[in-house]
Structures are given as structure tokens and as C-alpha cells.
Image (cartoon, rainbow, N blue to C red; front, top):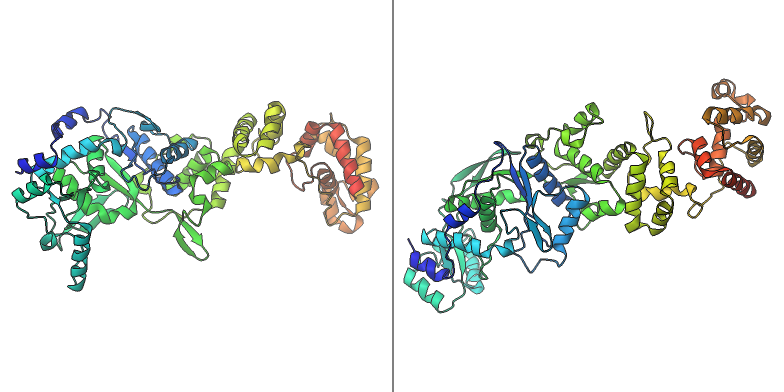
Length: 548
């Protein structure tokens, strides 16, 4: 026991580990419930890998009736950005991956297991570090940077593995009196774990995705408190996850190599080791090969990209589920109208290789999600998006929400709704011909239609057009003007004898569609024309005729 050394190192620490064990008791959760945490560092923008990890945390907790909390690991103040916490919170909120407890704002938090910022937990870390010193499991190291560099160079020359361990651990066996003397003189130190690892020996860990892992024991006397008294990640996360009663740790597979050290720290502290879930990075095709989605190269790596583009939160979560569980798409086909929360998510169905990110597939998923929304939902969500990213469109939608809702209702409330919209940034292009302020007529013609024929079609159509016509009556009038113009009113009849006609009724309606909307393909043209009204229809057709 090194009580005197522990008191010299931590003279102000009065509480014992028992105090914190009582303060943070085991959670009162149902049997089998999982407690997960999303624990990012506020060092930059929120990226897709972060959000995917947080989503797995949430699914893991929700599927078992557990708790998912947000902890901010802000011990590296040099890398921290000023609005880092806000960026994290904004990213989670934007896509509905909200934690049950933890950090809720720059200066706010909710829950009984805080503080949820590591920078506010220094006294707790010191308490447990002091206990390790008392038990002889940790010791102060007074080596300066130049001492460590000289050690590294010597090891390199002698062909030894680099690091602070065994005979190379200069301060490991300093007499206690010498240690206390150096502390009293104000000598700078770090605190190191006294490793009991044996070179060549393996530890076995069961990862919930990767199964049985065999890894070499940690033999390094790792730093558990830096010279400023702040712990690096391995020690801090062990104390935090134990006291916050985390049962399952979800994190990137780059942490697998550090597992032996982490498990050694848990064992030294006498803590139960949580279950680990190491997820592979999200991949992207680059030519014929795969690579990790890059924060530097790929705009879609940033969570802000999806917000700016206007992907609905439900669409993004739906797509992330296709990456998380390979059986999700089959489940969705079998349950097209079931809420996402009904899906039986399982960590065991996650792949150990990186999921391949496909923006086109996200678009397809999102088109399906938006096609099931009501017109009023589409109008509301598009207006909210436009307020931040397209002021002109926002003003148009906001000025007359009933008209905008009518625009989005066309071909929506039917057995097979159209799937034209994947994200709110496409709304301007989708709806522009409904608004004169942003409509840009093109004056184009189909390749198979001559200008003189198009002119006759439109002039004749204006004489029979009636805004009050329903779809069948409207199309009957189009067919009625076909034969006098040399076009077949029946597509099948035209296909049987194409040489006898200039075209068919579909060509006539296409010319009308182009004159009114400048589009070859639109939702129900009859309903579009009803919404635009006779005055605008006539003006557009006359303008189109002039352009011809």
C-alpha cells in the first residue's frame, strides 16, 4: 500500500470510490435493458460516421427499453472548437437521434449521472487515480519529453519495441521517499498505470459484431493522468462508463487495438467490463475500389450536408438502417406502412466490414419516404427548409400555404403516388412552373413535332379548353382535335399504322404540357391546369406560340 504517496499526489481528494459508487447507483432499468452512450469530442463538424454511431447507440438502447445518453469528451482543449457542442447537438436534433439524458445545450444537461462533460469530472478521476496509487497499481513518472525521446532512440538502436515498459520504465521502481521528495519540490509528473501485462500472452474479448477477438496483452505503462491532471481517453472512459452504468460501448473499429489497455484499466479499477460493439467505417466507391468516406474529400461526409440538401430526418434514419442491418430492406418491403420503430434491430446483424454509402440509394429511399407524406406535411417541411436555404422559395410558399399544399397534393393521395422529390432542395425545380416569379419558359418542342403543327394544336386547343373539365372530359377534348390535325386519337391505332398519322394524342398532350409547364414529364396535367387557372394558361400558350 502507498497511502503516503497517494496523499502526496492528491492532497485535496477527500472522497473515496465508495462515495461515488453510492452517488451513482446501478440504474433501475428492466432486465436486459442496455445503457449506451454517444461520447464525441467537440473538435469540429459532425460527420456521418458520428451520426451512424449515435444512431446505433439509440437503436441498441430503444430496442431493449434502455437508456441512451450524450457525454461530451472535452479533455483535449487544444483541439476543441468554440461551437463544437452546438454542432453535435444540432446534428442529433436535425435527424431525430436525441439522447434520453446527458448534455442538452452549451451550459445545460439532464440526468442523475453527470456531470456529462469530462472537463467537469476532474475530481472524480483523481479519486480513482488516488485509489490506484494506494494499491500500488499506478505511479508518478517524472520523465521529461527529452528523456522519453532519448529512450525511444535507444530502443530503436537496440531493435527493441518502443514504449515505456519493463526495464525501460525509469520511474516505475523509484523509492517512495524519492517520489514524495520530487513531488514536494514541484517536479512535473504524469501518472502511469503499472502494467501487469506479459509479452506474448493474449487476452480474449467477445465483440458483439466481430465475435471472439484474440489480442496481445498490454505491456506498456500507459499514462492515465497527464501533467495537467486531465486523463486521456482510456482512463476517463473507464471511470465514466462505470459510474454512468454504461452496459454497451459502441465505437469505431479503430479502437480495437486499444482494447487490451482499456480492459487492463477496468480490471485495475475493479470494474465490470462493458460489452463492446466495434463498428466498421462507412465506405465509398472511388472508381473501381472502396475507401473510407472522407471528411476532406466528400461533402456527404458532413452531417450538415443532409440538412442543407433538405433530406427529411426520417429518410436519413431509414437509409442508415439499411446500412446497419442487412435485413431492414426485406422488412420494409413486407411492412411498407409500419413505423420505423417497429423494426427489430439487432447488433448481431451488423456487418463487420464497412457498409457502402450510396447517395443515389439514399435518394431512392427518401423519394419513397416523401411520397408517403401528406401534401400538408410536404408543404410544411419544404417551407421550414426554404426559410434557411432559399428565401425566395420560402416567401412564395409562406405567402399562400393553401395554394402550395394544393400543388403538392397532385398525384399524391393515390395508390401509387409519384416519387419525384428526394429532398427539399428539389422543391424549387419541382414546383417552379406553379409560380410566375420563378418560372422559366423554354419554348422547346419534341423532335417529332413540327412548329406549324404545334401552333395549330395549341390554337385549336384554346377554343375547347375549359378549366372546369374533369380529367376524362379534358382528355376527350384533346382526342377530338387530333384527327383534323392529322394525329391519331388512339395510340394503339397509331402504332398499327404509323405512316397514316403525324403522331398521336400523347404527342398533342405533350405539346400542351410543354407550352404550359416547359416540361416533358409532370404530374397530372389536367389538375395542374386547374390550379394555374385560365388566365395563366392562355398567357403561357400565347407566349409559347410567339416563341414558335
